[in-house]
Image 1 (cartoon, one colour):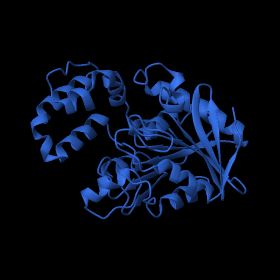
Image 2 (cartoon, rainbow, N blue to C red):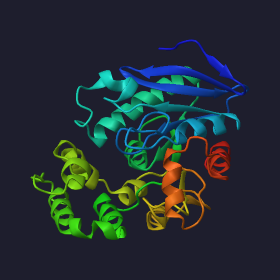
Image 3 (cartoon, rainbow, N blue to C red):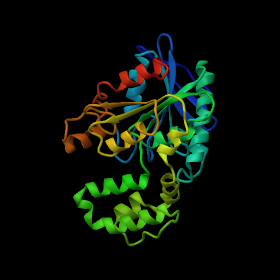
Length: 306
């Protein structure tokens, strides 16, 4: 289950596994005050927060380093069927949120075994926030940190994202037909549609997962969970907006919210309103995390969710 520790300053890193699932546990050099499980965002996103579709900003690795400096250990993971967890399932697209919730339970158990922690905090980024919500009622979960997480049904967010780019105007009628079908629980033939839709966003291989995603109701899930919750959003996030954070924060009493100035979707600080700089940050692993992000999480966790 474990390999030799790699020590780098105040951070000690070690491979960790949960059955066929693989990840990295990062621990502070001194006392470990809490343990956070980082649940990754959509698509083929790895334990560092990178994916082969153009994201090389390494936000999860940097978040783990930042939290370790605050005395908080983290476990960051590869999703089933991908990267180090490739052996967990033959087809990484053949998954559901129930599968990811089961994997989360396995990771919580592995993290507790590795650290002796009484319970584990779940930090879900983007799609990972939906997984965290789906997993929240499992035993041994301390509370939730929802980072750039959807607060509305995914179909509404996709419509908003597609419409926000004027260049997508010719694609919108086909996109709407696909979204309506997926919302109804039915896959749809996309042959003949623009490759950005047919081979990208609505590739037939991912349509069953998209149907499952569109069934997720984050506000309803959050209302059903009574533990501590921190909702974090970025003021410069062009993928998941303020409306989502506000919907989550307003779902019930007791949900904390922190909006990080200048933070984009990959957790980096970018100039306000500069879309080119915002997108460039997705590929910049040298750019630090947005100021205030690590502190917000550390203060919430160390305070027991208060």
